[in-house]
Length: 243
Ligand code: G3P
Ligand code: CA
Image 1 (cartoon, helix red, strand yellow):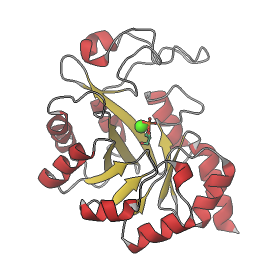
Image 2 (tube, rainbow, N blue to C red):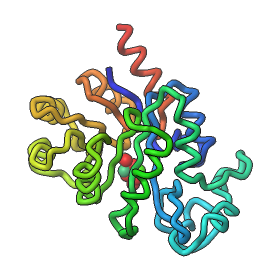
Image 3 (spheres, helix red, strand yellow):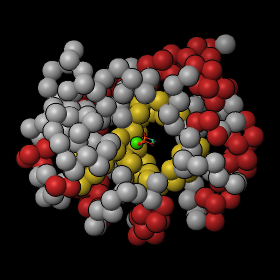
Image 4 (spheres, rainbow, N blue to C red):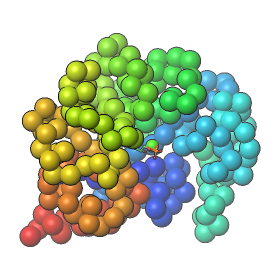
């Protein structure tokens, strides 16, 4: 059964990467959530998509140039007047919230533009502190970073994020000893899924919002899909499974 992962929570209907958005994804029956992580000036892992806070909050500048105390004063729901003030969460807040929930957590390290020093070590320390392993899937466009974690902490599942159309990505994953890839949705078709399965590579495409693509992936037995609209995807999957 295809698992449904809410992208940045339920970013189609709620301010992305906020507790409000994560709670919404959980309540609509998603199997997991995806979020993005950067590091603040004072070394806190914070949940936000861009290197800068300009697009999603009422603040300005780089995440890395603000302490968490400063970051938490900005409104992460500024583009959503229908919602009250939302704080930029710390990763730790999400770990506490998710710990007892039957939800996967896909943590995307945003370390492919800025290379945050020791972000992998900091992340592993936090996961250990909260005793989280099975629920966790780590991903990044920075494959060196994922390999570093896979080598030092093989208890965590790591996934390679792919944005370009790659030649035989399942072979690339096998060669790196990684068993999951997160490709762009429009690169994935039935054959892509079959080949990946033959190579024991799990596929979780992003960001799948179109009904037809959701349908195709579910009917072709895709492992999971990452969507801004987890409510729609859960409903569709459950309907398709009934028939
Ligand atoms: O993790 C899947 C997807 O979120 C990667 O792209 O830019 O939405 O973080 P982006
Ligand atoms: Ca992401």
